[in-house]
Length: 409
Image (cartoon, rainbow, N blue to C red; front, top):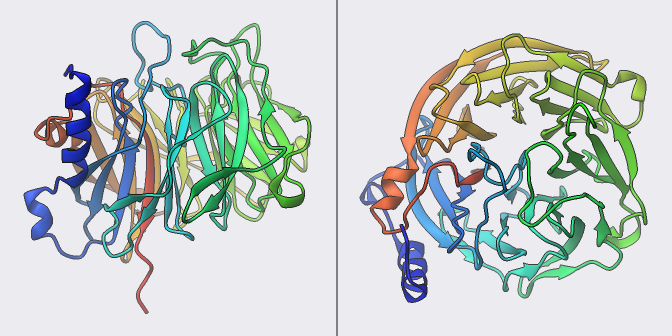
C-alpha cells in the first residue's frame, strides 16, 4: 500500500500503539517473536506474543526509525535482504533487541519489557552502520556489544557499545571492510554477504559470504575480538568445504568455535575455526535451497528451512563435528516461502518459529524430542497488520528472533 510521507508518520505512531483485541484475554504468555516489515517506505519491528501452546498473538508494529530495502533479483526471492539470519537480534541476557534499517543504513536498539515483551521501547536514536545496506546484526553473550554487517557497495562490519540511556555508541577500531564487489542494493543471492555472528566464546567475529558458482564458492571472514571490543585489522578467510558454495546462515555449536551453515548448494556445511580437518559439506536428500537454520537447545540438533522444497530439515553434528540428517518435515508448500527461523522455549515446551514471506504467515512447530516435531499451525501476520493500515507485501519481511520468559522456580 502506498502512503504519502505524512501518512507514514501517522501509521508509525498508530501501529506502535496498536493492540489486538485478543491481547486483553490471552494468558500464559511465555515469550515473544520479532521480525521486520522491511517496507522501503517505513520499516517496522513486528511483534507477537507466544502462548504456552505455541500460538501467536500479533501485537504491535514498532517503527524502527528508518526504511527497509529490497535486494536486486528478478523474480523477487523469498528473502528480500539475501541475509542468512539477523535482520533482528535479541539479547536474552540483557532484554534488548536490535534491528537493521537496510534502506537508511542505520541500526536501531530497543528495550524488551519482560512483563510485556511485545512492548519495545527505543533506546536513543538509530545510528549509522558505517556502510551500505545493513542486513544482519548480532549481540555478544553479555548483550553489551552489537555488531552489524553491511552488504552493499560499501560493505563490511562495525561494532557498537550498548548504553542503556543514549543507545548505541561506535567502538573504535571496529569498522572493517569486506571489499565485496557489490552494489547498493546488492545483487544476489549468489555473491552476496549472508550473516554476522560471534563465536560461542565471543573471541571472534564471523561473517558468511556466499559464492557465485562456478566462479567462486564462498567463505567465512573471521576477525579476532581484541582489547575493549576492537577487531583485528584484517580478517582471515576460511574457505567453504568442497561441495558447498553458498554458506547462508550460521548457527554456533556450543562449547566450540564451530558452526553449522545452511548451504543451498548441498544441504549444510560444518566449519571448525580451530581444526580445518573437520570442515565438511553434508548433502541433504531432496534439498532445493536450505538457507536458514537455528539450533534447538532441547535436542542439540539444528533445524534448516528449505523454501524450494517446503521442508524443515533436522540435522545433527556429533562430538567430532560429523554431520548427519536426522529427520525431514514437510511444511506448507513452495509458495509459502519459508525463510528465517529461530527456536525458543515457552514454559516446558520448545517451538520452532519460521517466517513464511510468500503467504505472510509465521509457521510454528513444537520440538518433542530428537527426530520428532509436531506442527502447531500457521499464523497470519499479513492479515493482522493489514487491518492496522500498515500494508504488508509478500516476500518483503525478514528476520526472526525469539525472547523467552525466564523459567519460574
